[in-house]
Image (cartoon, rainbow, N blue to C red; front, side, top):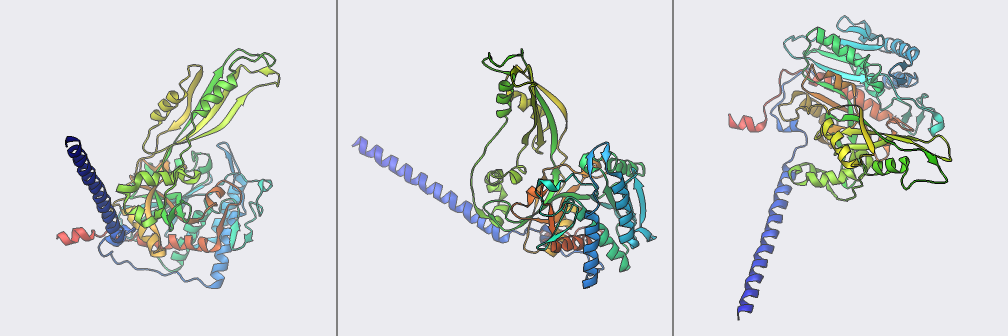
Length: 505
């Protein structure tokens, strides 16, 4: 009788437990579903009525489209390559300077625009607004590109700007001459139409971003600081529109970078007695180092699939799972963690000699959730071998996280511009996995954003610094329009209050 009673109580307990679990899951699902249908990817849509500004439309004739494309191709054909901090193609940079002045005559002759050369080859343009009390903003891009060799397997020569199936191929098409030319082309069109901004703004075009920007961007910032300039926000290259790049998530997303990864280069080295290869020791310097390097690796592999809108509207619930989705591929894994890349491994001088020394260099791109010091400590903990020497060669912490709430002026202006052009897009904050010139500007602004509406489909992220870098003709026109609209959208005094704030009044 007692055993029967115990079983009955256990059955009732399990029944209640199962009901509670099912009920909890149902409630979570209902909450998530409601949030999904009430979710507005563009916070600008949740804001009250935007202040009216004089909008200038951009309608291009076939000839203007032809000229716009020719200007961009001419920019791609100039090999403004940066090899090292002390080796940049100065003759190409001078040629590029001449091109800009030729194809953007209004920009470089207008009494409204002040143009200065900085660090010999970088450009600073100042466009004063009619309302001097409005805090200015700044648009950034960089002129230089990384090296490219046709022998690596390009479908078209990397500095040919050749058209293939609606795409322009060439080094710099997505990094970052599409923004250089897009910003100036947009300003040229605005000036042609008699535009004068209400809010002042600056344009900074660096010439050595690919080799740390120490002569270009750093000197532009130094000049602005000497003048006491403080910026509302800065917009630079960085993230883009991802369409089908994130496995398992349906729909394209525009990711606006609100931070930028830090970086560390760590040297691992092992020293041991040399010897003859005919009498190898139990462990050689190479073997010890190889084991240490291997311990740095991680291999997450979890699949997950739900509609993008459902995920983005319920990050409170799905952020751990979304992280697992992004971890599945190298180009999205970098968004959610500190990445580790072994970039150099050196040892040995002769095939029959056991080397006495072995060294490896490991490059880390540090996620905003970690610090440089934490990464170094983690390396030491992971290596956990007193025979392996760990040395920090150089590095810096991740950049501060910029504001992205409903009152974040720059973020909302960028989102409004994106949604005005692409209503189908989900717009969300993200972390820029590479480093940009914008990191030099952290002392003169609190908010730095990293985005251009370049569309990346599966396989496209690998073109960045890789083979067959390209952009579609349509996408380049969209980039020009984006900056054309963005400049005008900045001409409001302040953001409207959110609907919730209006209802409370």
